[in-house]
Every structure is written in C-alpha cells, then in structure tokens.
Amino acid sequence: MTNPAQHHRPASKKQLTLLRILAADRGQSFAYPQTTAEASQEIRRLMRESRVPRADRSREDKIVREAIAGSGDDARVRGDELAGWGSTAGWSREVEDDGEGRDRR
Figure 1 (cartoon, rainbow, N blue to C red):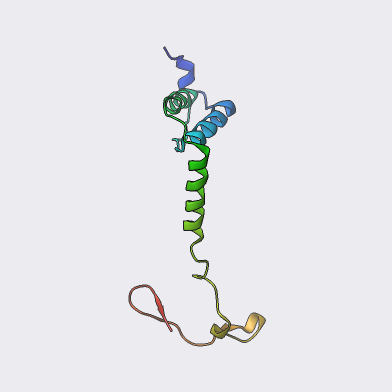
Figure 2: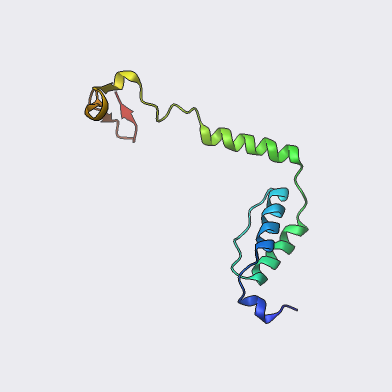
C-alpha cells in the first residue's frame, strides 16, 4: 500500500541517483519522476530488468559517439571558401542551394 503523502512529495535525491544507476546498468532510460511514488514505481520497474554486461554498454556507447561525431567535415570551412580577414571576411563566392537542402558550389 502506498503512502498518500508520497503522491505529492517530490522525488528525493537518493531516488534519482538510484534511478540513474539502475538505468545505466540496464541500458535503459526512465521517465523523470515528479513524485516519490512515481520514483518508487520506476525503481521497481528497473529492478525487474536484467543488467546489460559492461562490455556491451561500452560497445554501444562507442557506436553512438561515432554516429554523433560523423565525419566531422560537414561544418568545416575550407580555405578557398573565404575571402578577406577578421571582421571583413566573407564568402569568396555565392553558394547556391540545389533544391534538396544541399549547397552546390
């Protein structure tokens, strides 16, 4: 039986810390709880889930980091694209859109 006072008290720091640890160990996310009752419910849910091996978590983290980083060249400005120095610098030529959201040079 739940305590009616739990339905209005904000989730405690201990509960939020435990939620983060459990979610990381299980490779899952969680809905941020507004009350202690919601936090307790989410803790129970995560406790029922099995842990993901550390090697699998590390491998997945690496894949996500690489996907986010991409090639890294998408926003880089090449030397031949600029003209001038400092506050007077600007594009060396006009850039046209190819109609599909990509620049055509």
